[in-house]
Image (cartoon, rainbow, N blue to C red):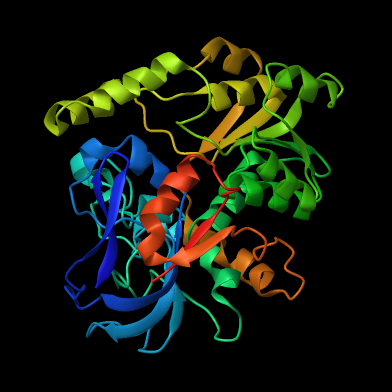
Length: 391
């Protein structure tokens, strides 16, 4: 089959690789019909090379049709149309029963002290072949799927794999009071959905991003948007009676704008041999935290900062005095996809499309064009906000 594989920093290619096969009786094989490039895939493209192997298949936002099931799979059949959640969970362990599927004890990657295995996302998360490919092996297939109908187009459902439940969880974790104000840092795909979920809940949404096309898209769905300027903290405080927003969702993560010194350090570590770079990134890694620091400044006293953007540093310095003094609550973590599907499935199937799932994809291309689209997406060129690949 054809699959998008990692080769080196800023280098991916579409190659012929062996077809996946049933390895355990609880597996299924899915023929992929649509698969997306996630903003967190760009961390692999740019920073996390020491935890990747040449030829690793990337991608964790797929959907398609079941073409084969293992002998112990009872809840899926050949021909079923499914979305595949990005985290691999069993559904029956201590964590899964508590709605913490991203911490699944069956698939935790204990070698690295990580949570549940993820599709296409480095040694840190199991080095499981991903979904930017023609076919995908799905472990624990009885639970690790979202069965959908056959009438609506893929775009109605595809984003249930990751970014839509990630945004929903980000807003749930933000604990915005009824009629309150939610600030959103970053209007990439997750930030777009965070803003829409906030509007759907009746919150006043103030969203920040330096890219005009992203601001324009968010405005179409009811958010008030602002450029990322040196005065943005003061601007948003002025809009909230000087207090700040009730809650802030940081939808940017570790590659935020700002702090060129940290960017240089990240780049230098990435140039080291993997055996040297991995322990440095694990124990001394630092993130570009401009978005998080701005979120802490923007939120009101007693408010909540919710992190949906990915962070990977273990040596990051937090402004503990400010966090303590302002009595700020923080929630964060990989999304527990299956936890939120009962809330989201009726919304994506609603004919009125209340969360605008049909107004996010800006680029739809064949799988063969994935390498150029990684570059376009990273550079935020050509109005690129969301890329969907069709194998």
